Length: 411
Length: 90
View 1 (cartoon, rainbow over the protein chains, first blue to last red):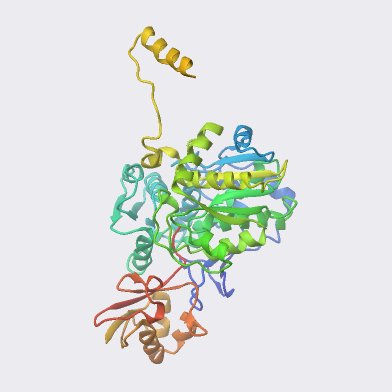
View 2: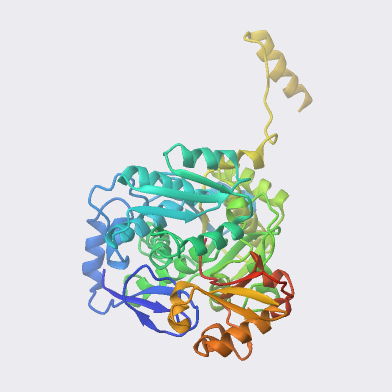
């Protein structure tokens, strides 16, 4: 942790550390800036390896250290070698799945919330809040419960029941807003001026976003201190996507890992594809859309980090694709059958794009390709309802035999 | 047409602390020009070469002007024009 302060990504204006999130001069987003010049790679590596079993082992690269014995410490989720999936996709690439559903509230949002809340406490806030498409609300509500903080989570009122329940169970103030995520977001941006709260993804956003870098750090560590050749990751606001890139870059810069940035492939749903559309058209800014997709966790029609996601995909020789709702459902099934991991719709988006890329022959033999699975399938049951089949039988051998013998004959 | 333009906290330093400014105008562009006429410092923070900076969002009574006619979006008596940073969320 060698934080210099906050810095505008657009014009470079510097600010002291505070709950500020946009530049007063040009409205650009603020980002945490560090001075890593004093870090010795070998020493940092030893510190990481001796660290906690979660994101706080990367404190050298985060704006806070986290409390020792954090009961909800996220991170160090499995990086699974997915040979069966590669076979199903017909690719010779070395395929990996980073299963970030294996976090305390079953999504990558536990990472960003852990960082934001640690910073919020340091800045003296006792109430935390967020604008969310569901997963973030779950993470904020759980962390508030664990830390004894007051919380308000604002979500679109028509969200999946599982995500509403998995927020309210923690005793938060669950606020269902009659509008889409972008409306919730706008409301929260106004509430920042009227409530003395730490909105993790509004006024604490510079710190919050840093948490996503830990996914890049873990990937490198779990690949045996090597960089992947390609990554495939979902794009909602574009924050995860760009911070993955920043994570790899920080480690390349200080010599913790050798090589170049992986090619970055972004994944969106057709029904909410402002970033993929702008990428395809060669634009630098995203035209906002009104989302209509089953991938509600990615249904952000006005993505704040869209321009940076486009820039990073271009710079690394990657691209940004979108897929239909049917392809998303097929993606969920493909991942489940190929790896034993049941993901939510956002993961379906990622796998559907992975499949497109593989089928188009974009992966070379032996290339290390990592797909990021950011959430859990049980949270989006609506999307997969009625897609399963069951053999219903009586509790006796005859009934079993007749069901399965009948199947064999027909096969 | 008289409308209220709401100013985010961080920009109130340029409006002498005012959170809201009452101006006249028939569309968003005219209303903003009227605000800039009163508080010149705001023009450069919000616009660049005559268009809105890329991280500035403007809403008329809650509706994003990019879904309407941008700076040409018509406003009616009593409308609220809100200027917000676009860097939240996700």
